[in-house]
Image 1 (spheres, rainbow, N blue to C red):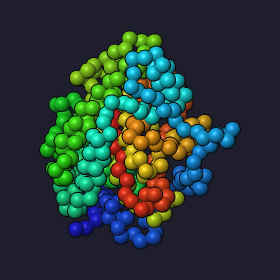
Image 2 (image 1 turned 90 degrees about the horizontal axis):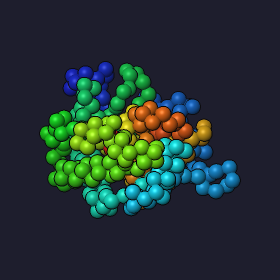
Image 3 (image 1 turned 45 degrees about the vertical axis):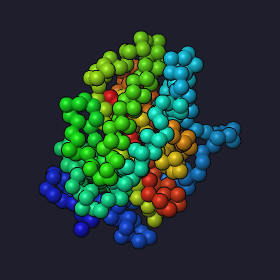
Length: 315
């Protein structure tokens, strides 16, 4: 099957799957994927970031086992004010479910191309299997494919757009979505309390329990022969209220920009990386100190094995 998909779905030019490019490009990536020099991951950003004092520098890690405690409220509030990010541990979503979610989606991206293309998306909704998002004709492309789904509200949730293979995917995604919604609600309550508000204020502002929106994007980053020239996802901020990111534990590929410095996140196994999005920043009037963040295709670790990251945006 051709590596190009152009089913008349409204894309300005034929869509090429990055998986197909990875399989056929040899040791040189196509020019379309080469970022401008200022946008590339530099030699320094591929190394572990350190603070000016020589110690390690990483986004805060917050224990969410007691979300109603004053200690948790203070920790989340401080992390969000200083960074806009934190890693949530002891969050209540079982490691076994996280394993099933990762494994199921990795299984989808390993299906034959003709199976994946049954779910090809269009720029009208972006829901389904895709390789570009908000990219203009002739623009530089990111080194990654993705799958995008609406989960809430139930009225726009379409199970027919969920892959049927592997057989574990639909059940794992349904359960994963339910559990992460619960976690988002807990974090929202903690954020409200940290702002001196009633615990339900932020939740109410975004539609209340049962009325909020949520979507899931699974990013797949194929092996790359020249990771120093490209990015998995270009620099951006999240437009939603809150993002929960589940990364591959063995891949150090996420960077956040703080005080003008790109910092590579060292992921805690089975933690969620929580990002306060633009909507909460605007609603709370709390200045954004962490400008943007992006995922880059990181060195030999990804070259020896493909990587799946699951992004969950709420509301």
